[in-house]
Length: 161
Image (tube, rainbow, N blue to C red; front, side, top):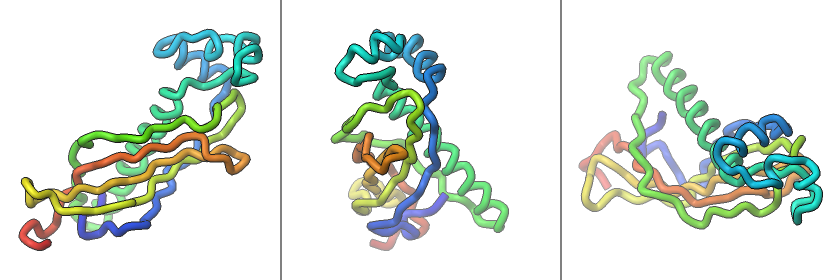
C-alpha cells in the first residue's frame, strides 16, 4: 500500500463491484438486520423501497470487503516489485454516512474512494491523516451510498512536512 507522500487530493481508487442477489440480501439480513423488507420479497414490495432491499449495513460491509481486497492486491504488487508496502493504520472514524437510494435484489453496485484531504498528524509525526469520500453507484449510474472516512497513513519521511 502507498505511503502518505504518494497520496494526493483527487486520487481515485475503483474498488470493484458487487451484485446484491436476493439470496445474499436475505442471508446478511437474517444474521445482522432482520427487518421484513430485507427478508421477504412481498414485504419489500409493500415497503417504501418497492422491492427486496439490501440492508444499508450490507452495502457498507461490501465496501469494506472490497477495500480490504484492493489493499491486499496493492500490497502484493508492491512486494512483487521489491518495495516495502506501507501498512495503513486504523481509522479514527467516519462521518456523513448516507444511503441515498435503495439497493434492491439484482442491483450491482460499483464502489470507489477518492482522496478529499491530507494532513500530517500533529501528535504522531510518523503518520498522516487522509480523508476519503467513499461511494457506491448502481448499474444505472445512481449514487446509492456515500461516507467520508479518515485513515492513518504511514509517512515515508516523518521529519518532513
